Length: 367
Ligand SMILES: *Cc1c(COP(=O)(O)O)cnc(C)c1O
Image 1 (cartoon, rainbow, N blue to C red):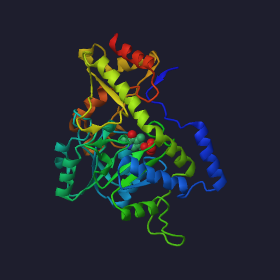
Image 2: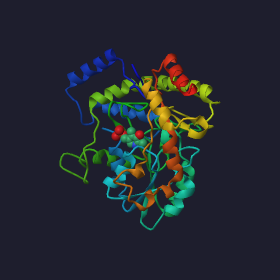
Image 3: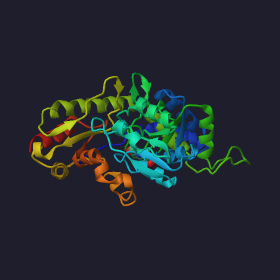
Image 4: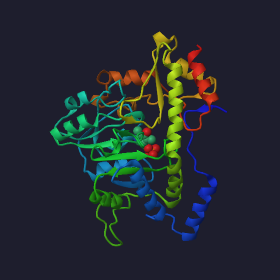
């Protein structure tokens, strides 16, 4: 069996069956049922945030956040992410404006934001890539100075805290993905985090076609509700997510010990004061120093049954929809290109055995 980059955290089937029995008995399978309510409450508590609205995936809360805040014109974002970040901007009829990243974190470089602001700019959409927190204080200062909204794509940042505070409290809204490949999953699923009850109410209307009650539609809503079955599944996974994060942490410790002195291989260390979720373990290959290019190592691993992934390669700014944008040129994004061209995300999940981890390490160490 190949060693895959991730493996879904699955609830105990017996426990899931008894929750399914409850749902079958209630005959209430979607539309803000009791498991949906319970998961929203449990997540708000676990994540240390005031309000959570569940969604059916992690892309729809991005789309809905931009709608709800009536974002128009230009949105400043990062090319170093999963493509859904930029698609959400495009689907709202806005123009993505890419700024380069800070190689120390992989996140949008706050020093480059101001130069990208024009009279048409209305929002900033940063990503906490690999779950590494953005410099949210700096970004907020810039946003306040120019009157911009900030929407964080926090799809990788489930449970990430800085000095005991959730990173999800930054900005106007943050969005999460609960896709099967993420640290916490509901198979497909997602959420939006917001600061006040009024916004939560509005988002809850918008994700249900704009219905405020049986006869009133308050806006052009969409359907992005999570159902009862996946909400129940999520409640069970929430009980085991801390153990899963700790198992990932142990894998990260092993990788770092073994790879620290390998010439031409670098990786991120933990940041002080941050509770990381170890959602990914990216390594960066310097072909000249390592003696093998990133792709040579990637394919060698693949041939040997270790399926790393080149997240995030190619850069979003190189896809056909976006490469004609003025901000999409390689000259504007040299650091993002360098990172995309050198990255391999190593297998990282809660169920990796010591043997698996040793196999990954030995493929990298022995050339
Ligand atoms: C996974 C992911 C999404 C999309 O989430 P889905 O639940 O798959 O729709 C958005 N942004 C980033 C950065 C992601 O990694």
